[in-house]
Image 1 (cartoon, rainbow over the protein chains, first blue to last red):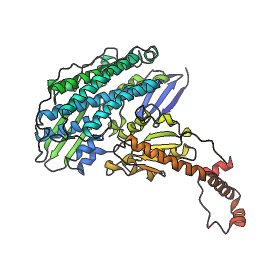
Image 2 (tube, rainbow over the protein chains, first blue to last red; image 1 turned 90 degrees about the horizontal axis):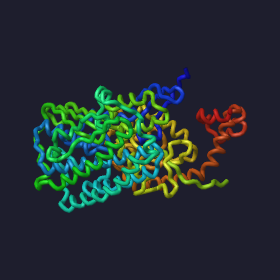
Image 3 (tube, helix red, strand yellow; image 1 turned 30 degrees about the horizontal axis):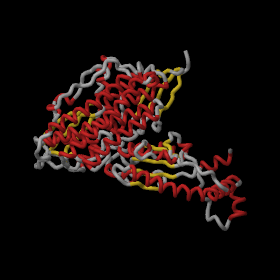
Length: 359
Length: 185
């Protein structure tokens, strides 16, 4: 029996740009146990509801995370709109859908780049991020911001996209499809990439259910779970089926995300074809009263927004539960018994967003 | 004394930012902006870095981490605070776990505002940082000589110091434990 050693991993580490700390207990080259500790970027923004009016709080909630910021803003709006029984115009719902799916494409491409960086394939990293820039250009053109847009507000959206603008978006997405297909071939067929991903970090169907995993992590283990299926926003009018894989390893998780990028492109194209004319926002009157829970399918999985109002302009309590929070137990589980060299892969394939987790 | 010019390498640490500025820092390195063509590399090792990019504000838990990275960087070094959170706390200023900008912990040379800071602004900030780096590099030999003199005064006792430099030092200057430790080695 060899001696156990503890290797501290993080908080400053080269795997992802965010601080997370893990104590890796290893025997030879094998990880026996991983003990995560978080709290490096806790801000306590939920408490800000006591100081910010419910209409201003959208800006704060958007900054839960800079990657899926639109989704967070939408989730908050959905929760308060449910609270106040506001009916959002249909065009606004479609626009929200388009921006949210664009965020998913940008988030998944970002992740694919980080994954490539994680296994040392630098040119693949650069290409993923190059394609991602064209999505950011769409954001900049339609909303004015690259990563944080503040375009979602209570009762609708702040900016409209003209018919020409929508046609241009469809054109850009059609254009990147070819490049994405090329990228997909490398991610899914390349010999050395497969060596790093296939069979690494297996999570069985029962484990995925038991550990309450969400999002692509769950779907890669065969769990059919997608909050978009409940038809909120314009999702009810779009035709799509959740992407699932059976294997539950890093390769399956990579495949799910790549297929979701193509799925999102198809959904945006559908939404652009169907989008009705009309208003983009309704005025918001009154104060939130009562409680409401809204669920969203973020790029990383199910997110949960709870709000309770007491009739004043400040909410009584706001709670956000983010997907990475739910996937950390599964990450710790897959880390047990893995090789030390695979640790970055396993941490990356849950697509961790620490600033979401700690808020 | 001349120094071989070296491409500036950067190290990035996320204080408690929302990720927005972090991905913009990375976006500077990728093909659209591509600062790597000028030899600027994002390194994970503080001992290789010249410029420290900090995003997000500080809290109790990450103060030691930021200090440690800063202390491990060799001189001359420049700190660039990226985004409004790193500058002052920004939108999270009133949160209970936010202690303010990065300058409450380590000296900051360049501030890049924005929420999130745009890659162009970050590149501008780093370029400004290069000027500061050149200035600090020019001053470095004199600083080192002064520190050595100070350390030897500390090591050989107050008597020797009083004999040679009584008029110029107004009192026993507190040099950090780091410098005196080095001298003993």
